[in-house]
Amino acid sequence: IDIATRDLKKKCKERGFNDPEEVRKDSLTSDALNDHRVAWEQWDRSMDRVQTNLKTVDSELQGQKLPDLESTASALQGLQQTILELQNALEADQTKQVELGGVLQQKAKLRSRLEELRQSTAALVQLADDLTGRNNRRVHFETFILHYYLQEVARHANQRLHRLSDGRYQL
Image (cartoon, rainbow, N blue to C red; front, side, top):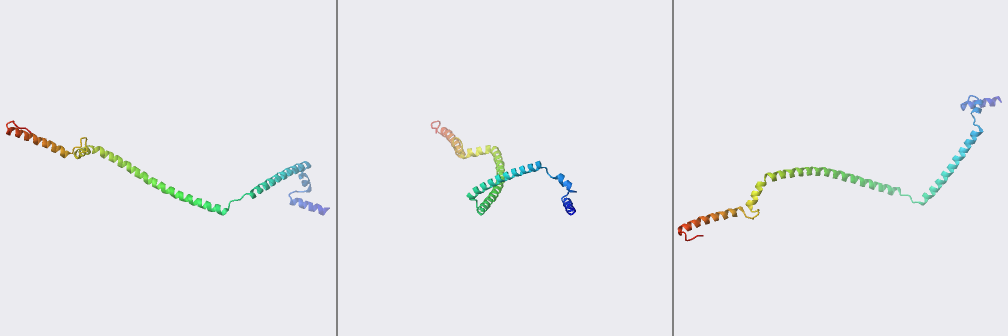
């Protein structure tokens, strides 16, 4: 008995108890054991339901054809290449957009400069149009001058003829 008692005390100390009396006090009551048994049975039933659901899902998945990983990987690689190409195209388009923005600003400056020049040279343009015959009557300046010169010559000739003929002739 002494040997058994010593072994019992030794095992109690290994488990963290000072003497066998503490083990007895620490042991569970029958109600607590019953509660643990009920909880264990509930857990066991829930595990059975999980196992049943797992078997159902497994049987459903066995009937389905799963995608091939190699084809999916190659499709993914193709999509990544397409994304890379689109990003490069986007960068090129953004660069071109910046360049076109500069061109548009330059165009706006040139337009405003052209408008200033049109306003300052409007009189000269009108004179050039009149001299070249781009006017309402479509008469060139040279024709206009020659016409008035001919009228002046005819008037002087008429006066001279009138004087020489003592008023009898007139052009």
